[in-house]
Image (tube, rainbow, N blue to C red; front, top):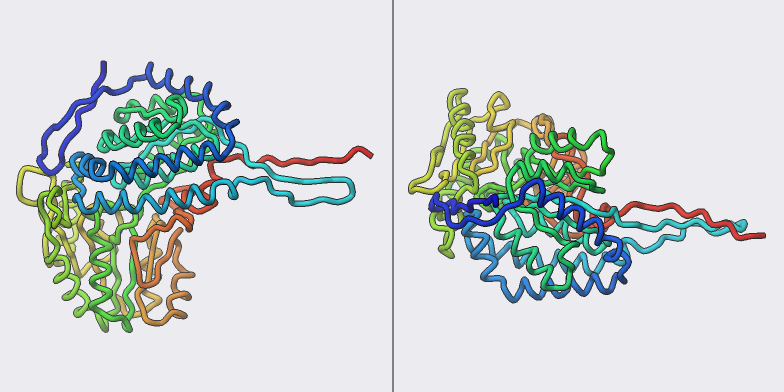
Length: 458
């Protein structure tokens, strides 16, 4: 039987080895999910809502154990693991409150003996290949609305968060979701590839741009619905009129939260020359005060990188920037100890010849570039193949709105960053992906609109 080794990123060691899937078991699970889906879809919405309500209660009851599991296998600081689980609760509430209305039949015309309406049918059996950096958020953004709208789910958690994925699956089963409707598939890339070979009705992926491209290519000829939530190189602009300290503290948190391992983490900052030096001083001071260390310590803010190979990626970006004239004001190297740490890093004197300002970092590192005007800032912010989030810090709301309207991003921020709301759609532009989750649109994305033309006999 194949197995999967589970690593502790802080210790850099194997902590468990669990049974994994292979091509045969993936095929069996996919067939069982497809066979079971019609009965699940035929249940009243109230029954499916009750399952998710019980699931929410189970998360609350077991929150500390779930947080410890997530921290052990991802290196996320325990306080942030608790934050993620507590932050999941209002998302679940939103889905429960909005699901029925989002897929209610729409009666759009009635006249001349003709009635027109729109219904929302479930896609069928859908695959969710999920991410490790926010396994509860990212997984449940797909799993919960997919189940509520009557789909069966083949869920592959990241191999770096498999224990958490199994916990999500267990709690859903204990809450009344049938085992064949919610199937967890465990393994690495080969298992993900096996999932793509199955007869499926939708593929929902969160991860790297490179993997997203391979998935899209693999499914293109089969005309399967594909939704890809990919990376970002999220920019922020600090105008001359800001409260410099407040902006620096907010953006430092946006860059370093979750050890910088977030698709909407702040990765590049453009600062007006009038406040540049003061901003950088406050920013570096804030970053240096962040405690790095054991993720199980409640006071730790910077944990381990979940994937060891990312250390080399970060180091290469630092070395490239320095070679091209940038200055490292703090960090810039692998952290101490046996684990997979990287010191919180601030680099100034940056420009767009540097990989640090162009390619996703996904770690506790940020580049800062001085600009002379709003126009220069907007041009640089849009000089990217990504388009996930972008934002502006300023006291002037009208200026902020005018600038945000020019930014090519799925989400824009004024005086905030690294923020997600269940009420707003989460989507990207360009290489940041296609499709969306969250909001009522993110519930409807798991359905197929069906048009009804009904003529009365006369």
